[in-house]
Amino acid sequence: MNKYYFIFLIWLLPGYFLFQGAYQVLINNGLNNTYTSGESYVAEVIDFDVKQIAAQTNGYVEIRFDTAEGERIQKRLALSVQMAQVIMQSELIPIRYLEESNSPVVLLPTFDLQRSVVKVNMAVTGFGFLVTLLVAFFASRFAFRKIRDGEERLEIENIDDYKIMSDAR
Image 1 (cartoon, rainbow, N blue to C red):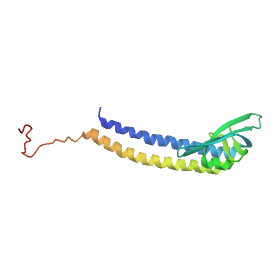
Image 2 (image 1 turned 45 degrees about the horizontal axis):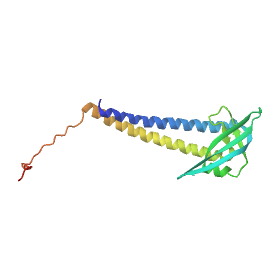
Image 3 (image 1 turned 60 degrees about the vertical axis):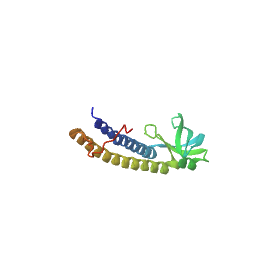
Image 4 (image 1 turned 90 degrees about the vertical axis):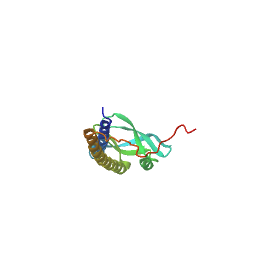
């Protein structure tokens, strides 16, 4: 098997970015759907934690609320440090809830920030998709050329008459 066939694995990168972009679009649609069509509740903060590991800071908030049907729902939501700062001192948080949405719970104080983060993620994955698509295209052209024409054979020839003496005693 020709080693240039392995270059075609680069097409996995645009596929990955396409998958991530589609995921971000689903999250964005879920956020908007929950915000516009969801029911408003006030959730009680049960647990809240922000962790800093090396240069990364993230956390979570655990909320509990009762729906109009009398069902008690408890959710743990991951938070970035920017979102955690908005709700850090809150004991009660206004939320929107839509069970059948991709994002069933939307924290109203952090909605604009969350939506802007998702839009930035969509832009970054879109840019990554385009760049890796371009790289994969040119890499595939290179691989097709090498597979079709074969590798260039280099022949090294000694052109000087100088003889190296190994036993010069």
